[in-house]
Image 1: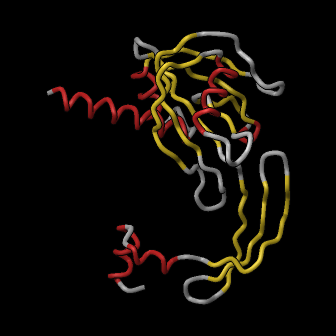
Image 2: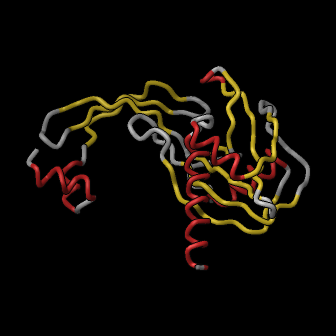
Amino acid sequence: MKPKEQIACVSGDTRDHFLKEEKISSQEIYRGAVLHVTKDTVRLPNGKESLREVAWHDGAVAILPIFEDGSVLFEHQYRYAHGRVVKEIPAGKLDSPDEDMLSAAKRELREETGYTAEKWTDLGITIPSVAILGERIRIFLAEGLTGGEVEPDEDEFLHLERIPFDTLLSMVLSGEIEDSKTQVAVLKYQLLKNQKSKRRT
């Protein structure tokens, strides 16, 4: 690749369309309740062929619930894939690929924590594993919280904790929080706070 083409790729130039890979064939490897795995043959930009193994997922939502005092509602949940309890913000998968993501976020917050929120802010989408996983997670900020009944799934066991946001931010920066959606949500919220502070001065 020539130097000018390299610069275009990094900058997001419209010439990036030359990087597109074309699917030639697709073989289903596994279809489960959560993931659908395929092994695809693709044609590369240089005309050669290659294989792509992808786990497809309907998508998910994650919620950063902030109380009036600035503390955050946080979860401890055992994650089998990593063999340990993970500290993370509330989240859940969509019931279908076309489900409204805000509606899903409201459902997940209510079911997992018992809380509802008066104000919702879209913090954007994060892609947890861009090379092999088709999942996209939309993150929401939830404010104006009101407590209620918890309605977890039958196979879902959680421990809820309320901690100061600055403590959570320190946990993210120190590496104690490894969950990517939690990292993105916390850091984006901190940037929003910084922007608001600058506008006031």
